[in-house]
Amino acid sequence: MPPRSASGRRPAPAGELRDGFKFRGGRLALDFAASLAGRLREQPTDLLREPDDLGRWLVAAGLAVRPPAPTRADLVGARELREALYRLALSCARGRPLAEADRAIVNRWAARPGPAPQLAAGGALTWRGAGVPALIAAIARDGVELLGGSDAARIRACAGEGCAVLFLDTSRAGRRRWCSMASCGNQAKVRGFRRRARRGARRQ
Image 1 (cartoon, rainbow, N blue to C red):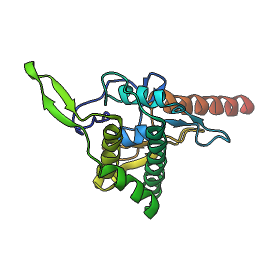
Image 2 (cartoon, rainbow, N blue to C red):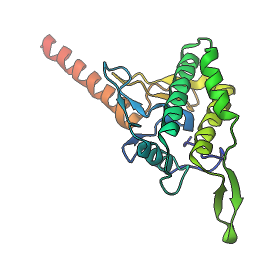
Image 3 (cartoon, one colour):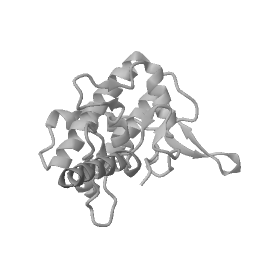
């Protein structure tokens, strides 16, 4: 399922990689958590280094048509929300209780006013009150819906080597292992093929 927009309904732009960001989670909140890349490395890479990076992410996620102008305070708050969402989603994936402090962060953002969908002339969808804090609140609301609903049981941690992406498993069997078959899944298949080839060579 593609990430959802501020209303929770409008599909975001297509593609797993957009403007340098990964969108493999299947939900807005999980994709936002992926904006800290390489979480399993000694030094992860924060893709939201500057306020403008947050603006670019909001456009890539389909929450804004043009890059807004986030402040430094917006960036600090967005990062705090991102990490709370990641920890809560990871707890769901591992069957652990949800931390009270992280729930408080997400709930505080989700309680803020969000952008309102409006029907413009010609039937186009526009947004009112879509400032940066409202867009961040929309991410938090998606997180609340995800973590507090039945889909929480389908949050998975990618089994790819070195990958920390969390994703929503929408497969019928509920046994999906990779955030992306084109990336982590394909790499795992290549490694498996090479291992089998080495074992076969040693037997000869």
